[in-house]
Length: 466
Image (cartoon, rainbow, N blue to C red):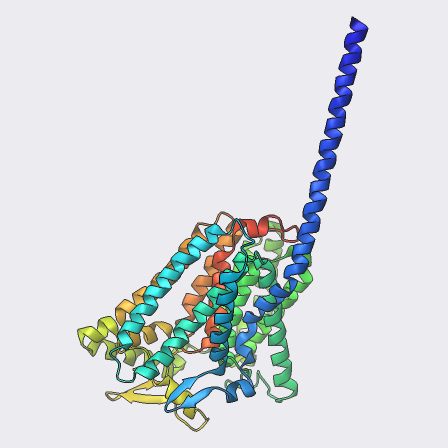
């Protein structure tokens, strides 16, 4: 009986071991299948990642024939790049509606984006209702398109990315590469072709399409904040090279709204580094360098605009102050509802007449003002009133709330990108006067907002850090 019991026990153990082997082989096989599927998916969506990443450089396509094809008639101006965005937007929408959903776990993103869309539609409907009582309705519609088209273009592109399960992190990485490459090419072109000495005088600045050097400088700030969110420690050389190029070009733009935030971002990055020994060494080295070479004086010597006070830019300062005085003196309906989009600042007319000899100043009730206030909040306050400004801020606040819900600290850093955009809106009318730059910035912010934990969870090449 004992021998029989032992034999039965041995047979059972043998069967169990066979089952375990089969189970292990089955798991290994499933892993191989999943790896093959992932490789196929990567190959399948490789082109789409490169394609959608082009939105990162869409403002810099406004050159040559693109500018010549812009609509300029009867005091109305519609950039050709915006016409392209409208056409592409309808193509994207058609593709989105009839494409197959390949992202079963993207429902959370879609729900958040739907709520964000509702906030934006309410804002746009308010602006549309207001301009129905405008003296120049056609001009108001053109100007309204500067505000609406970029957002919806960026949103439809993102909806396709989510629905087709295209890798958001890869789009960000490729987009950052595109943008950094453009900055490098633009700098080389300025030095060797245009023969501009970028650090010789206060007025020396990088020549670039897409809103000029100032908006390029502001965009560099947002891109650097994006690099900190998805920084890749396995490719440190590429990471630090991109960062170095962007910092250098930021100073080449001569924009204080770029140089100051970039310097602050670099300091935050050093302090956030979790390697305490490395952090202490870097801080001590920086302190020694500050004592020895006095970098602020050195920077001011070679980049004079870095040390200039904001108050030195008198045109922007008196435009902001005069705008607030005008706003306070208007009737209650203008205070609440504004003058209507495109009905106060004559930006479109100036764009048509633009040349170095045309003044960018106009007068309202004796107050001198710039044709655009270089301040998003002042612009919206006068053209859409208090209600319009509140509705606009509601959109941004909802984006911040989405980021606050994220569990991974590195994803919550997306708030930095949004807060930086809010800060930069004090220095220019970023989201209301330049459609191409606006679509680029909205696309980046929407990517940051939609980035979730599972977008990074299975990415071996990304090492998350707090």
